[in-house]
Length: 437
Ligand code: ADP
Ligand code: ZN
Image (tube, rainbow, N blue to C red; front, side):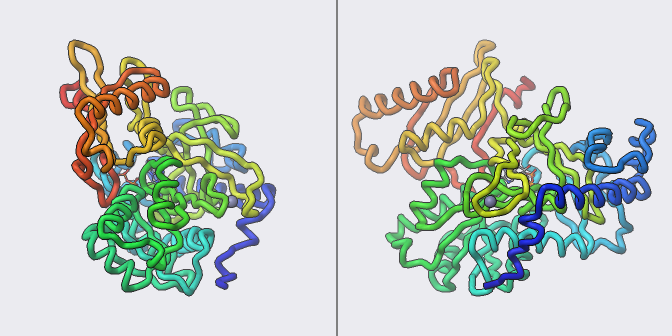
């Protein structure tokens, strides 16, 4: 066993030990950004905070937040805390929510990243005997390179397939004996569907686990993927601004992701008042990098809503756990004044026995918001009468109304007709935005 990648000493350290590491690294990082990044120096000066005022994690709340807009304003290299000669890699966000941003990594930053990705792989039971099939995109997007680095670190065999070409993915799963599949959950679902369509029994594959993240997904979808691929499916979280995948990683308990607290301090805040919330209360996740050299962002507002807990985990790890973020504040739809996350809709669909292939259309007609959801009918409904299909639609609408608290129209469409995603799925089309609403 790759004992070396069960970093037991740190992963199961006492809360006091973790806190001591964070105190020390935060003090260093604040000095580093004050000395090297104009934006932080200016903001701290304006707020009357000297680097010496930050003595421990307790002082974190004195520091100003960093936002995606800051990364855009200082694009491309304005927030780098080291000269570009020390930068060995650049990555950019996938641009899901606007203009792309760019981040840099020193060699040490890449080493830390490989290390935390190795923790994720180890946590799902992988070691040097495994074949890590990386179907996240390779390129400026952080997905591919992130897990790839971890595979090298545990001495496993990396298979850098990248995303797309699903037939080839399946051939590789069969011929190369991939044991761990890494991709977005929506792509995992698509691969699973194609495996089924080809009449391949998943039990004939060597696959045992999947590491799926980069987008929100539900517990219901996890169960569906686990069943269809005959694997254990684990969540992984990360974002370009902070590192890429593996900022937090799921363990055998499958009840949330441990934040790598020796490298990142996590807080949950009220997005309106910006107040720090106690553990257990849902809030916007805010990360502070405490070991990074190139882009050690301070109190970066993710806009992801999650819940933090420090309860004892059955795996033995002591790092704070965060729940699957149910979506970003930017993904949240406000429909007739009611907040709706696409993930709530997904939960209903899957509970009612549908696949997670759906598309949400929001519009405004006569000054009233409308919500229309296209859902693929199951194969066995395909031969149903029009009246029967109407009945299915009505049943779904009733269920959605009771969970969301607002009415939605459902249209069942033919199986396979909703566009599949090989990366992050785009499930919402909000036409109100197009007309400036
Ligand atoms: P972009 O911002 O362009 O999508 P990133 O690849 O950096 O680029 O995306 C990071 C974001 O992806 C996170 O802020 C979060 O919203 C989402 N995300 C990543 N992992 C997960 C996950 N496991 N569950 C839910 N959302 C996730
Ligand atoms: Zn755990």
